Image (cartoon, rainbow, N blue to C red; front, side, top):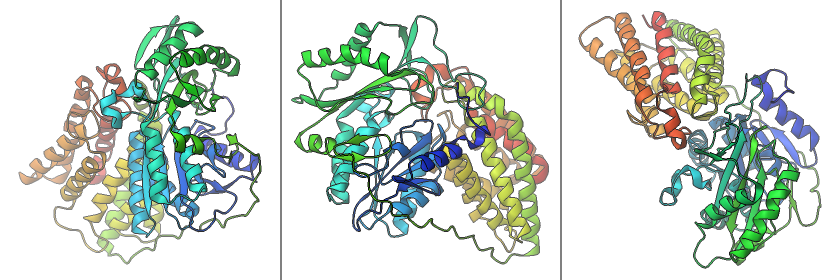
Length: 565
C-alpha cells in the first residue's frame, strides 16, 4: 500500500518535483514533465517518452544522454494530457524533429496523437512509435492491439542511442519500430497495487493462484492459473515468449522486471531458472537487465521481456547511456546547462455580447453542478472501473470537472462569452483529467464550443452543440454504439434530444427526457463486452457490470438539467 503522500490528487506532481530535486545534474523540471538538464546539440532528434505516474523508473528515470531527451508524466496510471505532451516536446525539440514513444493504451494514444498534430501545425516534424509488446493482450496477428509494458525500455534505449549517434528522424523511427516489432513480454501478478488514498488494492489474486497477463496500470491478469514454483514459472514464461521467436533469430536482450513489491532476491532466483532454458533453445542472451525497470506502484508481480537483436540493434542497445535510473558504459554525467522554463501565455478574452456573457454564466453554473455530482459519484465510478481497469475513472472525472468549473469561473469573471468560456473549460478538463476520458471530454466540449458564439446565440444552439460534441467523441475515440464506451449513452441521449426538439417540446423537458434515456442506456451497458480501451483484454470480467464512462455521462447530463432549462 502506498503510504507516503500529502493530498492523493497531488501525488504525481509531488513525486515529479522530488525526483527533479534528487537529480538536478541530469534532469530539469518543465511544465508537464522533465527534460535533460544538458542542452542537446542543434539538429539532434529529440526522444520524448511518457505515460502515467506510478511506473518509476519509467518514464522520468529514463531521461539522460543516450536515452530520452524528455519525459511527459501524467497522474497515477493516467496518460498525460495533450497540453502536457505539447509543452514537454516543445521544450525538448532541438531542430531535428521529435519522436514520441509511449505504450499502446487508449488515453496515451489519444493525447499523444492530438499533441503530434498540434506540434506539426507549429512546424515541428514529429513521428510516433507506439510500443505494443504485451503478448497476453492480443493474438500475434493483432499486434497493433497489444499493450505496451517493459518493452518500452528497449525501444526508448535503442531510439535514444540512434538519436545520440546522429540518425535523422526517419532513421530513428526505423530502428525504433523494428525494435518494437521484435519485442515481446509477458507479466505475472500475485497482488494488485494500491494507489495513494485507495481503500485497497485494485485487484486481488486468490491464494494459490497467479494472474497471467497483467497490465502495468494495475490491470489484473487476463487469466488465473495455479501458482508455480520458480522452475515451472520460468518454463511457462520462456515457452510463451519463444513461441513468437522470429525465424532465424538467435541473439536477444532479455529483461526480467519486478513490478514494485517483487524484489531483487526473488527475481534472481527466477533468473537463475530462465537463462538455462533460453540457452537450451539456442538463444544468445545479450546484456540482460534484471531489476525494477517499469513498475506498477506496489504491485506484487513481474514480467519477462525478450527483444531480438540484429547487428545494428545490438550495437545501439549496448551504446553508452546515463540517466537517473538506467546506465550503460562510462558513467559520465553531462554538464548542467539550465533551460529557460517556457512561459505559458494567457488566452486573450475576445469581445462578447451581453447575451453570450449571460449564457457563459449558465455554462459555469452547469460545470459547478457537474463537478459536485461527479464528486458524489466518484466511489461508485471507481468501483465500476476497477472491474476491468485501474479504478481511476471516478477520480479523474471529478478532477477534470472541478478544473473545468474553476476555469469557467475565471473566464466569466474576465467577461468571456459562451465560446471562450467553454473552450477554456474544455482545455482545463482535458489537462487536469488526462487519460482517455479527459481527452474525449475535452474534444467533445471543444467541438460544442466551436458551434456557439461569443457574440450571439445561434438558433438550435444546444442540439447542434450536442451533435457536434458527439461527432467529435466518436471520431476521436473511434467508438461506436455497442463498444461499451461513453458513446453508448451519448448517442441515445443526443437522438432523444433532437427528436423531442423537432416535435417542438421545450428544451427543459426534452433535456430531462434525454437524460433519462442516457441513464437507461448506461444501465444496459452491463450486458455488453468492451471492444475498445483498457478493459478490452479483460472483457469477460466486464460482463455484468456497467461501463463507467457511460454512467458518468448520464450523471453529468442529469445533474445539469436545471441549468439547461
